[in-house]
Length: 376
Image (cartoon, rainbow, N blue to C red; front, side):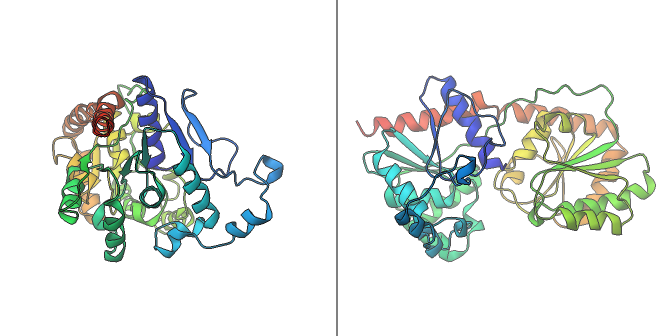
């Protein structure tokens, strides 16, 4: 359901548009139907179908069951999310990377990139695509990362800020370190001439997304603006806490939690104001999605994506992260200034066009072709 999944599918589809054969090797399958539609031109290979056997999952033999109950190499390396992996995951990924006929293999998170460095064949172009950012990792993880990534052919970041940071951290690296931003398709939902008085936020409902700050700010705004409402779209572990917060602040009748909404474009297109209150964003797909739909944007001023994507007062307005008073002031300002909302909407649309898949995919293709040509 996350941004990495979405942008990976966008890139895969765009590469298929250019005539490339594209395969997605998914490490573990746990549901019958994926959250996002996958273009039929893209082959999806499941390395381990973890669904119950009666639902089509794989029945493991005794050896694989023992591996499934053993610790993953990633867990010994303290990789985030590695508790969900196992020695069987290690084995399946290793076997795939050692036998794949792909010209280029791209990892899409830290664990997969470390697998790629550990198990990938040297005659395959190996690219680490990092959707978090270097300074987000603790020092021990940074050391592990830089040691392993030296084996790879390229490191791709989503921002220029992060690309510079990797170059500083890996001064003797012989591969390429380049920024290729995430891609977001143009919003297909039309924006009505008159939008309702609705403030919209969207993303995973987790503490780092800052939706509690948004609810606190909105509660103060709602006192003087009874005709305005707030919608927070998404799902995640923080939902109950946010519902309770809205009730405690007595705005439960004005705050809506519609769950995961797909496609999200119509939500942004019908938003009078879009708010991205995250505590950090490696890139920030929601920033570009909101801009592309013509929604005037308020965004927390945080690393890395927002400070590279948002030009304050041109395509969005910044507020101080985790500061509901700062966000309240920004909301009050935009609510009271339709002219500023129109200016930000136009600036946002112009920015979003640069991140449409047919623009971004050329950067991926050029990088891959350069790396492959260097092997000939």
